[in-house]
Length: 297
Image (cartoon, rainbow, N blue to C red; front, side, top):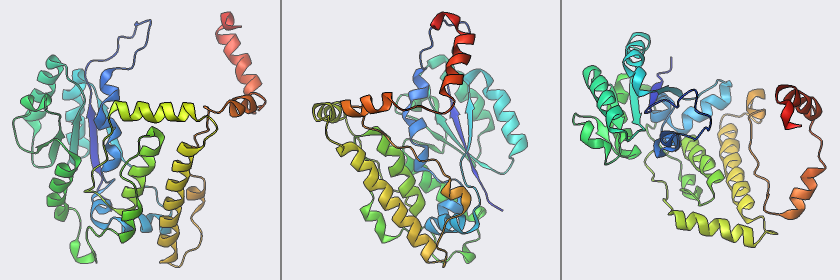
């Protein structure tokens, strides 16, 4: 039996239903939402690391995150449901709002139910509301605490090398300026059970410089090559995991896993090429859109 870790993203106010213009709420661009890949799926994933990934490859079992999004106005209901349904689970709360009124409500609700199985991720501003224990500002701090809880969920006598990280981790980057590469960075470290690394932080100026260079060199595939190099390393990790269990092919589900390829839209020839591509069902989709929105024709 696996022991999942329950990740909760606590948001602020809901977007008004009758708002004619949808603007992505600030909390939905919060750093914590993009940091989930720094954390393990389960306690078994935390402790066994690459061996856990190897077991998933061998059995074809699915492994993923248990995630809940909670708005401030429903946190009492969500907390009661959580305690009832997953009574012995460890809950990680990412606080994703800076609204003082929402923070008052969130902190009050969470403090009443706090116990050793609850931990909280906050930034420097939010910390004033969370004055009890198990409050952290970084993934490394939070994971160190999860490790103290792990013996309650994992039988260490059956784990040959707990928290072992293969040496090939040195070949994995800690984050690049090109945003689409970030998910590959997080996934690669997760495959190897490397939990205590720190993602490289880049300023907005660094990212803008990278974008300008890509636009100025529209014939270059340099940023796409970065993704390809990452994928090659991920495939090497998978091949090594399969080889050591005398298995040569992944399961059907793994073969069909989605892979996002970023096309070089900065290249004018690519834009012209895509204009001539017909996507199956595209005509039917256009007709459906015209039916729903006649004025769009």
